[in-house]
Image 1: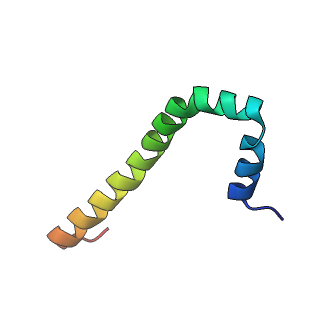
Image 2: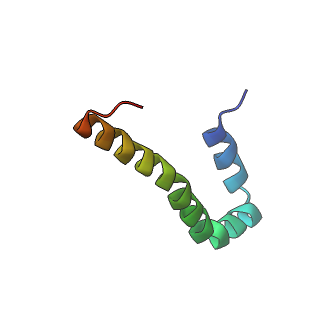
Image 3: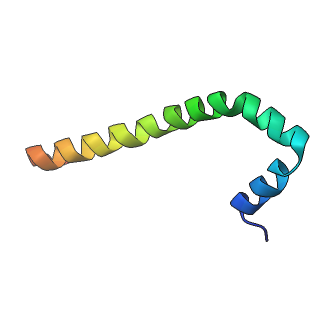
Length: 56
């Protein structure tokens, strides 16, 4: 089975796919940022819980 990274590289070897990917790159970065926010919030909540010795 091909890894996601290898599949992505193979697709980006196609000039038409690469051009479209580059047009959407800013949108991809925005989506990545939005998806990482809950992870950061969860981490902050865990740290707060540890610092206050609260039990869930």
